Length: 211
Image (cartoon, rainbow, N blue to C red; front, side, top):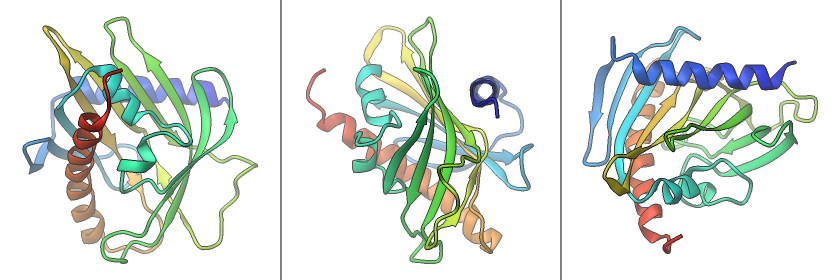
């Protein structure tokens, strides 16, 4: 499988979501984020978009967000229990396994996901993580976990002109959780989970010492 090509296609896809304002319906608002959704073209579910401004420089925000083993993400993101590097393809492209805890008061069992992830930097200072599901010989399905599938998803950190200590953060999730979950459980889980994601990210960034 051409992992690198697949990862680059995700980056283009997410930038397309960011640019295309049409069809999004707001489903949750908080002080930290506006969450909206529209039907996914990747699978029979929804793609969710989070958009918020985090108090902290892009470097600080990225330090909290970046998907690396033993990084800060596993400490503050309640939906990431463990993060494992399976294979480093290039400097910017890797294959990783993410383990998530049970959620929604136990209705959603622990999951694991195997993704190719591209870290991409843009000339304007924007930095993004871009992920989608792949199969990898080093990580067949594990007992005790439902194997979920991430369709193109990730986070984009955008500098704000004239505001060096603020960062615009876009997040995109479109996940097939697998198993036999009622659609209503999935549809209520993602908006509240994303609002919590932004709230916890803001706290994590605030707790960082100056880089």
